[in-house]
Image 1 (cartoon, helix red, strand yellow):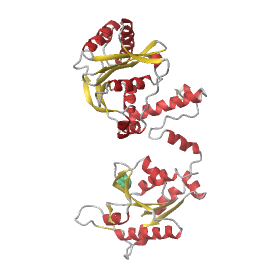
Image 2 (tube, helix red, strand yellow):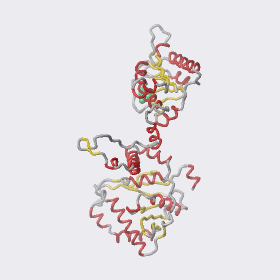
Image 3 (cartoon, helix red, strand yellow):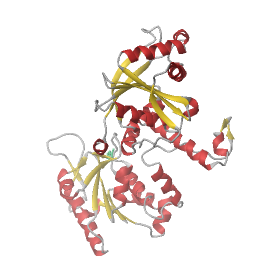
Image 4 (cartoon, helix red, strand yellow):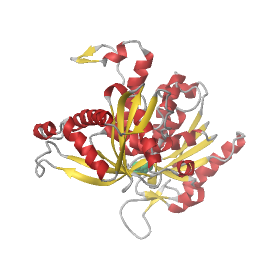
Amino acid sequence: MRIDIVTLFPELCDSFLGASILGRARARGLFEAHCHQIRDYTLNKQRQTDDYPYGGGCGMVLYAQPIADCLREVQRQCAAAGRGKPHVVFLTAGGQPYTQSIAKRLAGCDSLTLVCGHYEGIDERVIEAFGDEEISIGDYVLTGGELASLVVADSVLRLQPGVLAEAQGFQEESHWDGLLEYPQYTRPEVWEGRAVPPVLLTGDHEKIAGWRARQSHERTMTRRPDLYEAWCRTHPLTPGRWKRSERAALIRTEAEWAAAAEIYTAGWQQLCADVCTADYLAAHTTDFMKRELQADRAAGWAFYLHSTAGEPDALVGVCHRTGEIGRLYVAPQAQGRGIGAKLLAFARKKLAEHPRPFLTVLDCNRRAIALYLRMGFRPAGVHAVYDPAQDPAASAFCRELKFVYTPSENEEGAR
Ligand code: ADE
């Protein structure tokens, strides 16, 4: 790959591209980089590169001509080297937001030219005439495009084959594609009283991979819900197959109601422990919950009990009147086996007459929210708010969110 940077500060850009990992890769010929001084292409005696903006206003605007002539020279050099026409990117605060997926796309260019603006901007006509796209590296304004062009160059060049010492870095990245990285630790094992998470010292690679995956999901969900939602859209959960020993059946017998009430009560108590008062929790005995389930049944709900090898271990309810799915609880010993996902898909099929079934979930129930997102449910507002200042049963502020099944186009076809 060849990268050209068109700038008023070529030494600055060149010194960055000559240092550290990129510098070594450049010296090994893994990519070519050329930094061009815009001033060298001026036609006036003072070698002036900018002027006042038409229409008034503060700051100066870079002339179109020196940038255009510099870009023509880059095109000429590329052609002389047997390369195609370079892909030209202008770095501007008003460009499209830069992302890793744009970096991957640009990494596929044989020749990439980055043009750095300065002062108040660049004459729009040269962007129109030469620019393939405009990129911004974030919602803040820099004094010039140099740092932005180096951010783009760095993120694109590290993707070139051989640039990163450990090819592993790549594989990891594609594996964690779209999610934030898990936390990393190195020696010593205990630093200023803080120990490395014990799982990392076990040598059990499967366990470590599982821990890292959970960390990665948890971090993305809490720090970057926007990224997590995008990730969920591109990684829909395919409901697992039912194993031979597993079945879900409509609750009919007294023993089944009792088992369902047990699973429901234990799950509900655990979920609500941090947000409801002790009195409210204590009032929700298994008997009380059983009566609640049966009252719901009388109001149009159907409840299904899931069991593995005859042992009840999960519960789900559907309301044919409204299209709501609820009471999805998996007993602790059965968690992590995909039963929640299977029961959710099962519930949706039971509600075939409702193309957009919905459910509600407390905002603190991250595990369930992650499952719903991956199963094609999307946030659809706040269903209720529990505020200790107004609700005597609440011990902490929390929201009950509504999620509606909103499959993507290809999932829609598969329904
Ligand atoms: N020039 C000034 N601010 C910028 C930004 N945020 N991204 C890219 N180029 C810029």
